Length: 220
Image (cartoon, rainbow, N blue to C red; front, side, top):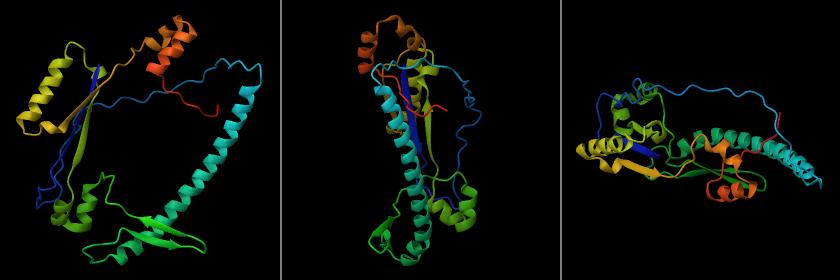
């Protein structure tokens, strides 16, 4: 089954005087409900030589140390960034060619804090408009959106017509380049259970072609 991505953006060249133009993207499209998983028991990996025991203990230790270090780095980064913002905007006030970074100077190190021209976007256009006014908001902000079509949810017999209709609709409005698609072979829902009818070596060979997602974590 194919999975198709439909991406588009309202052109920033459009500068409405009334503020940021917003479209009703989702409308009444329903969102999948979250599912809860129940606690289960699992078979243990055979460990006649004690290798699994050592690896499991080492993994648990390394993971806890990494979590602590990662948390400390994240906190320091967030605090440095927060303190650097005022210095960055103060130093660049009124400049046509602003600097990209400011420096945090330590006793034996200098940390460069950069603010790139990349923004994740905001879900609150009204607050932006209230801060800078509708004219500037309409000039410097636009609505970007991406629609994802789950090919697995479309019956196989209807898929060609659905894809053709999307392609024709975009071409009709002169934005055929907004459509991108990626196709791949995916197992059916029954495969994950049915595969255990084959021997382990066959399953290992299959994993080299289409490996299942593996997650390693500490069991609570």
